[in-house]
Amino acid sequence: MTTYIELVGLLIILMLPFLYETSHIFRYYFKFLIYYGIVSFNSIILIPAFLFRPCDVRNLLWASTFCHRISTLIGLRWELRGKEHLEKDQACIIVANHQSSLDILGMFDMWHIMNKCTVVAKRELFYAWPFGLAAWLAGLVFIDRVRGEKARATLNEVNHKIKNQKIKLWVFPEGTRRNTGELHPFKKGAFHMAIDEQIPILPVVFSSYCTFLNDKKKILNAGNIIVTALPPIPTEGLTKDDLDELMERVHWIMSDTFKQSSTEILQRYATHSLNNKPQTSNNSNTPKLSPVRTPTTDIGGDFIKHSDAVASTKTVFDENDYQDMMVVKKSTTLIH
Picture 1 (cartoon, rainbow, N blue to C red):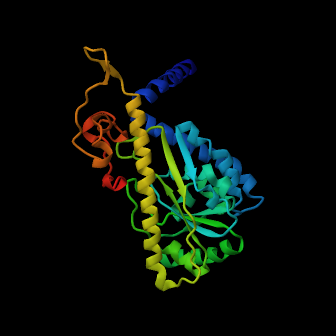
Picture 2: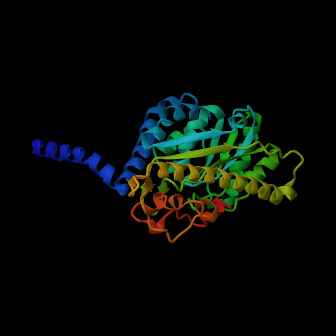
Picture 3: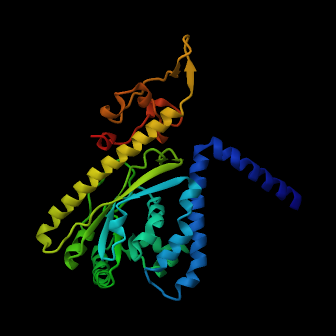
């Protein structure tokens, strides 16, 4: 019986490389299993250490030291711009766009730069033990999004603390993560907090994940992400009457940066794909790109009209055919 189980186990192990290389669905789940598995394992290891200074945001530096290597394992590379804004020893509200749980890996990659930083997270994550318990001991702020008044009371309690202790509070103002190629409307909580304590808003923008992630089709490939930390936006002298204008200003700045950095990533992706495309020879022995079928969808005229080869570039949205090539909902917002 033992021998049979060992043979089955060996067969499964031998099949893993084949499945990883041939099935994008297997690769998608396998990478997320690595991600969540390592985070959970590290949570178990770190909980005893966190108990020596419970709810101290500096505990997150230990967590990031253990977890930031996950990005390398699953093939993600984070390119940080505007580092000088994050490393300032100041209290601020960091507002960032939210596309996937992979955003947390980007945060792990730069936590040592931010130093004292914590995150506002939905209360449901607290019950995802061991991660939830470790996160609470590391000083994460859990809010009940269903009970709005209770959430505001929690944030008000935290607000004064972050100002006095010069802590950076990371908030995803869109609320729900959505990888749709655009910034969604912001909720008001983070901006209320900034005005209440007269501390700056510091926008952080992750470029689009469209070249490597598609949750609907279960695709997660290797990819590069530009993370841009923008100059802090002061709130001194602002009142509640200025709230909507502040939100609109921050949303516009972040949206513009998102378009620019996402366009750069798409252009890099197109260039890389073009350089790695197999070539054929004509009668004059002049190398040329192999012919491709013209896609039925477009990501923005200015990006693809200059070259049929660029137009034929595939992203994770069309791993098996050209018909879904470079499709991102409202993707023209990335270009124009």
